[in-house]
Length: 347
Ligand SMILES: C[S@@+](CC[C@H](N)C(=O)[O-])C[C@H]1O[C@@H](n2cnc3c(N)ncnc32)[C@H](O)[C@@H]1O
Image (cartoon, rainbow, N blue to C red; front, side, top):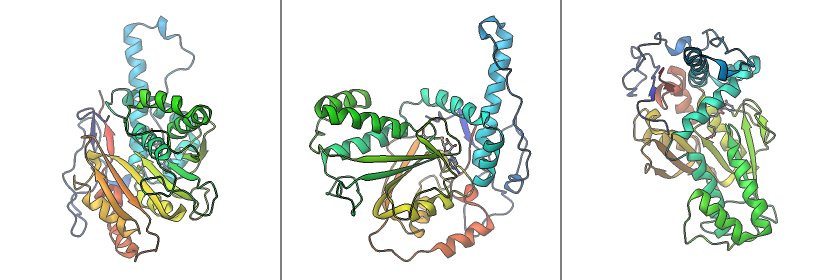
């Protein structure tokens, strides 16, 4: 988990220019980083700190050399993480296209952060897909939403900003096993992810297809795309997931894209780091997503470090309030007033 103390949010909003009626909080800037404003965000140098030499036999390094090596990769991880949170997605896409090695290093750093978290939100989503999928048929009360025009009622998931596509990998692996031996598959799954004794393999014909999108392809499950514009047809998905991936300063474009690809009745699941919420409660976040056409179902604050939001796309479109959101966005991007950047501290 983003250990309090191991990360800080750097709220990059220029505090001298508060956005009309918005409380944008106190600016937090690290002592070891120069102060930047959002106006700099797309102008700053897109050159990462130097890379550690390749093909090095680490076992032959002195303790000092090892320390230097780890500092180098740490600073590259922090640099790319900061780019993701403080630039828009066009810029992030360009940085990764020009320096693809950075993406691998980002995920190496992210993986090592995850190891220290008591709970990983992506595991909760894997569990939710499997438990709801096995216990109730799609489109029944409590079941997952499935495609209505499909005989199999396939649940089509878009994992937006999937990283290493853990969601697709684990769901596919489970389904393969489940089709061979549903009871055993569920038992093994419960052992790994934590069980709920009331969940049983009642729905034998579960179909879940996960599409995974990210800025680069770390494995074959991933399709390269900026999540503001993914290669999926209108209303072709039944669940859209953003697990810690609302990173770009234009992340409301990602939400609009989710609205486009979701079928009416489809669900939107969002997990974000609690300390990113500009109003700390997430109320403003939910209200904003609602103005973009979704209905708010629930906010789960049971985990101190992550807040999980559930929305759905109503069967009949509601009056959107995109205009008022656009107005606010013109005075400052959503990375300033809605979700603050999450910047890792230099150790
Ligand atoms: C913190 S990681 C989380 C990865 C994964 N969802 C998980 O929970 O393990 C966020 C991911 O979002 C991706 N991302 C951020 N902005 C993106 C964009 N505009 N388009 C595609 N992927 C993006 C990053 O590349 C990164 O892999």
